[in-house]
Amino acid sequence: MKLQVTQENLNRALNSVAKVANSRGTLPILANVLIKTSKNRLSLSATNLDIAITHYIGAKVSEEGSITVPARLMQDFVSSLPQEIIELELDGNKLHVSTEQYKSVVNGIVADDFPVMPAMTDGVIWKLDGSLFKKGLQQVVFAASNDETRPVLTGVLLKTSDNMLAMAATDSYRLAEKKLGKVSQDIQLLIPATALQDLLRVLGDGEDEVKIKHDEQQVLFQVGDIELVTRQVDGNYPDYQKLIPSTFATSASIKRADLTNVTKVSSLFARESAGSVTIEINEEKQQLSIRSVASQLGENTSTADVKAKGSGSITLNSRYLLDALNVMNGENVEFSFNGKLDPTMLVDSTSSDYRHIIMPLKS
Image 1 (cartoon, helix red, strand yellow):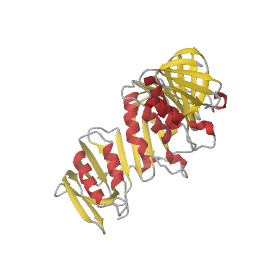
Image 2: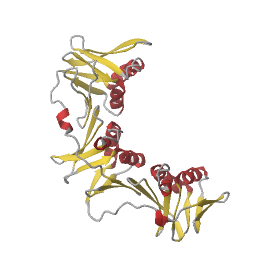
Image 3: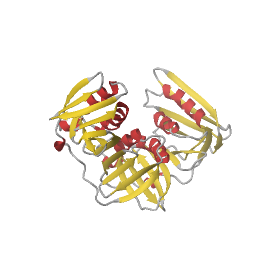
Image 4: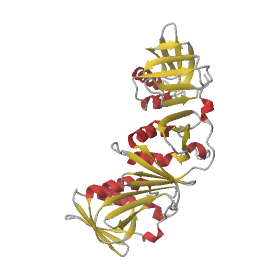
């Protein structure tokens, strides 16, 4: 293998794939990135056996070939080089990396030992608007669970209902749902949240579309010159629609910035109580108050003006509330609940395509 490539392109590709490489795995080669020529392009790939990501870049290829090299070393090394032409030349299992000022040799492992995700021969292919999908991921993925003992909840559900595609995630304490628009295919996929976090990392702001191909076991996302393949999560996702109340006894429209500010202040006094804050809506005063108590530090009550229908109080985890508010866009939000033990719902006043449910704490 012998080729020339720009430092900028090689660095960008390494940044895309290197984080997937797993240095803690039992297979040493999983800590490596596969560098492989394909006509006048260079592909860089990494995998942890559940997720595989490949980034294609342009290169001037003199001799075809492939090798795997340590991902972390290669990433740190190339990012330190000046923005000029880099020459890569393979001699046995040693990759010679050289520029005008730097000459280095990186010891590799033969590419034949690199694990490859099974190829999808058949599958359903469809497309999504890139900017809409990225925004949806930002609003939903963080609500998925990290608890591996409940693997179904570590996934994000993509499902159509009446030709409307929705994305949802829950850790059983909160639920985020984003409607992504109409699609003609009948889709039901359960995708690991970790894979979608990696996809979110490589999704640029200017991407026009994301191409998606899936079969019964895997999903392939293609974003420009980047491909990400992941296995689906096995299991049946809970029917989360049943968790969402259709009517509410108490609701308030409030400026998102106001609710964010009073929640932040109260959360400072709620650290001893695992972030617990009590929110009260008073219809007569058209006011929302939020109270937190820390036995060692003191207590805090903050208020904000609202347009309220009904009165009541509920105790929530302030961190969950802030997480939801931080991914919403509108100037105002609707904050609604029934009894003290029923779910709270937050929706953007200007858009009904995103809703966030938070389960209450016992007060």
